Length: 353
Ligand SMILES: Nc1ncnc2c1ncn2[C@@H]1O[C@H](COP(=O)(O)OS(=O)(=O)O)[C@@H](OP(=O)(O)O)[C@H]1O
Ligand SMILES: [Mg+2]
Ligand SMILES: [Mg+2]
Ligand SMILES: [Mg+2]
Image (cartoon, rainbow, N blue to C red; front, side, top):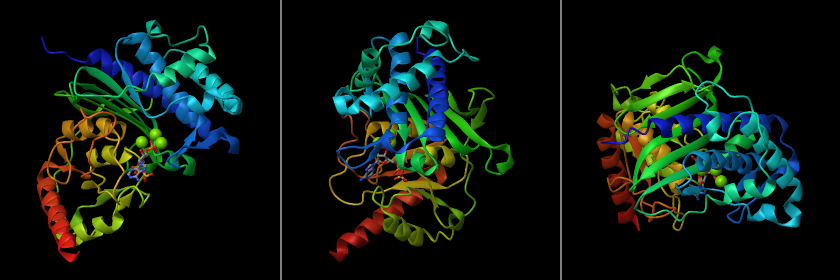
């Protein structure tokens, strides 16, 4: 019998929901010494660590045999200089784990009022995200705050969780606390969760994990109007390359820049026509946690996600997607045209050197 992944989706939504409450509360109260700069110069906050501890603890309680590929590790928190941050993270993670039960929660998952986890248990939970990945078996990916720079600016970020089985993403959940509920009606406020299960479609839910609305990428009427979704950081994906692709396609719309996998979610709601993320230089390898939930969300909303060679993203190579050929996500009707334009621009640039 085929697995339905209903329980996995339910747990993933509940974990992401709690993590979104945690990260929103951290943003309200974040103080200067609660952010570290990692080896690759990128920021990480108490919110990233605490959200990974929270999600990993819930996964461990429900699916104890599943390995986890998580972005963060606790080494900076285990040393004496990390004590203040560590104490804050432990308290944030415990507050989030023991917060009252909500619709869909099950106390058997170790959530709801009850005993606090020890510092060691929570640091170990963060470090359970150290799995190396690979092509066989089940594994979860956690990006506790995707778009940490956006989070720090008070703009878009996303709490991202996925289940990969034998290299294929089967479940993806993306929590976007700052994304408008309905872009056509800003007065409705912000905050949504997006969820997809392979073969079962994609949905937008409230930040409470309720009121599902099916997601379907709307067809594009003219290429001129295809709004590109792209990173805010030009260091993360090439803006100038996108401008050339836009020109080649005759696109008139100005690109929509936004941090995090909120770009994939926005594409599914028709807020942009294509998400293009081409490498800016040599060396950076895309991480599986930055794309796995977004990929299944777009595919289940009727779209296509490939690299610039037109190949599907390979989630079975380890913690990264391997050699970086970029990412192109778009509705079915638009994808092949964007891919052709990308390859044309690549050819022109190659001819120049
Ligand atoms: N050089 C380079 N190239 C490509 N991507 C990189 C690079 N450096 C970092 N990252 C990853 O980018 C993630 C942030 O996502 P976005 O690029 O969508 O948002 S942003 O607008 O750039 O902030 C970010 O995810 P978070 O660390 O979770 O924020 C990184 O994993
Ligand atoms: Mg990061
Ligand atoms: Mg990320
Ligand atoms: Mg992150």
